[in-house]
Length: 122
Image 1 (cartoon, rainbow, N blue to C red):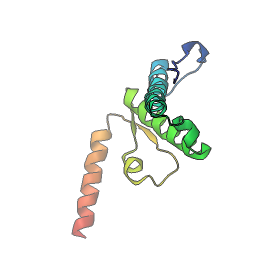
Image 2 (image 1 turned 60 degrees about the vertical axis):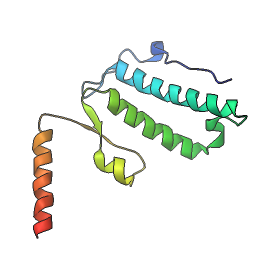
Image 3 (image 1 turned 90 degrees about the vertical axis):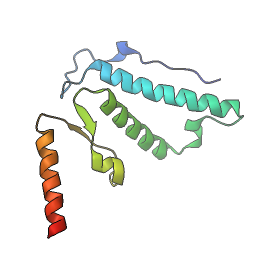
C-alpha cells in the first residue's frame, strides 16, 4: 500500500525571502499536489499488481517530470506567477519557465497581437 505524504512545513527556512509575492503556502501547496499525484497513481498501480510509478521511470525522466509538475503547480497557486505560454506548447527547453505578471501584461499582449498581425501582412 502506498503512503500518503504531507508537507512538513517545519522544514521550511523561516528566514527565506521570496520574490514576486510568493508565500510559504504557495510552495507547500505545490509540493502537496505532487505528493497527492504520486499517491493516487501508486495506489492504482499497486492495486493492479504493478510496481510504483517512481520505480518504473528512469531517474532523469522522474527529475524532469517532477520539475515540470512543480513549476505548473507553483504557477497555479501563486498570486503573481504564470507558466511561460511558449514553453507550455513547444517544450523546447529542459524546464518550463515562470514569469511574473504585472499590470503591463495587457499592453504586452496587445503589442504581441500587433506584431503578429504585421507579420501576416508583410
